[in-house]
Image 1 (cartoon, rainbow, N blue to C red):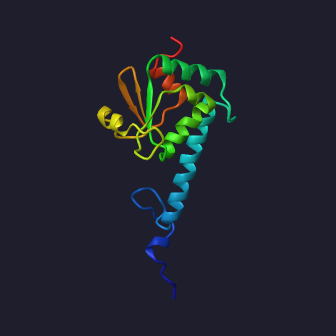
Image 2 (cartoon, rainbow, N blue to C red; image 1 turned 90 degrees about the vertical axis):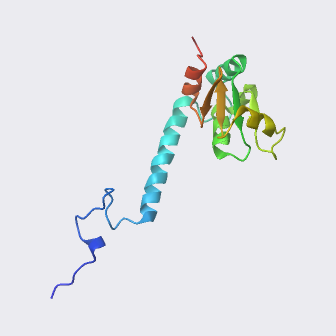
Length: 147
């Protein structure tokens, strides 16, 4: 007599989302993390060297952003904000930054509220709002750097 296998283990069966029915949620999470991490590292390496210092491109872009009145709104507790700062390395000191968390150093939470900032980080460049982390390339485009 043959033993019947549970439907989740029958070979060749897939769920509607394309995953094998036997694939665990843990496997799905691991695959998602690996894909997300590799995408971040790829985009990170496209924009700057991994040194703590800053390249001349990072410095010139940061100074340009200051010159055109760009501002980054964020929170010291926001991991995306901290990654955004790391993109510039030491050149971040040239970026106008507004701390939106009430417990942050030099907090300007009321300014963030007045400006309608709802997500961190949010860049305001030439009067336009750009929520979320941005690559150096995108910031250069938004601010018309080099034109």
